[in-house]
Length: 199
Image (cartoon, rainbow, N blue to C red):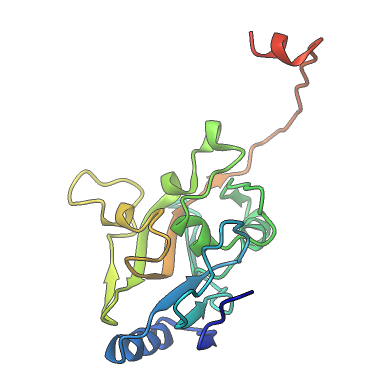
């Protein structure tokens, strides 16, 4: 609360993000990329002013391929919204973070978000196939093709996973999805105390 940005912008397209980044580069103005704002570590505090780029209005599903098991989305869609959309098509991303309701896809990728279902389905880093990123000079980079597996080329998208928006602003993400399971059940285990559960 002690620090405020000089401006906050809410772009709706890659082109608008490019214009914002280009203008900031021209005037040497700091940028802070914002996802759902669910962090608790002060990552969005603009200690030197600048522009907060809030991607929350970039929240559309751009493409779904049931046959190839991938979905392409803008970064501002929340994990909950995406799971609900996919469930209607018999699919799931299976990224259930603690901030599931408000965490955005872009924010989750940028912070290397951790899923409660990681032991079966992996983390968000394991789901990323390709990214579209606006770099610091306003140019756009696509990190790879929309294919499920490839054995050639550099995995450029890994540079941006966990980078907290410092290397560029994610404007599009292509993610692997899974078919919904045919059946679900719960298994409970009971222990006398905490230490016996660790044995």
